[in-house]
Image (cartoon, rainbow, N blue to C red; front, side, top):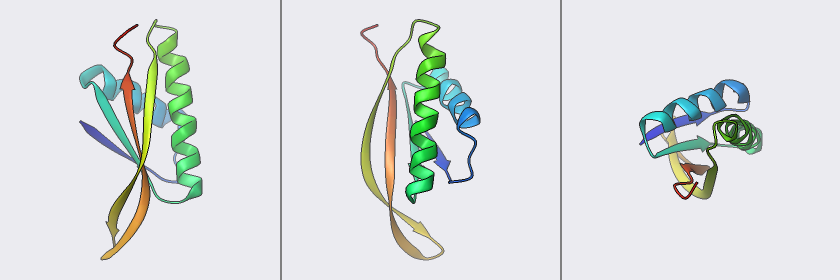
Length: 89
């Protein structure tokens, strides 16, 4: 499983490309984001990746959750978005 860290400054198109590339190698990719702006960019990236992969006849689904991440010695709560290819398609 590949883990992609997304910030509020991340380009959603580039993250979408990374999602598509990671799902070509693995069955699941995890996005990690801390803060509303970063979560916004991560969700946009999943939507863009779903549109791109949909053109290839593939469909994505995502499972959101919370995670604790250590940043500069402090534990912060962030969002984890696990993205899977829909195997039923």
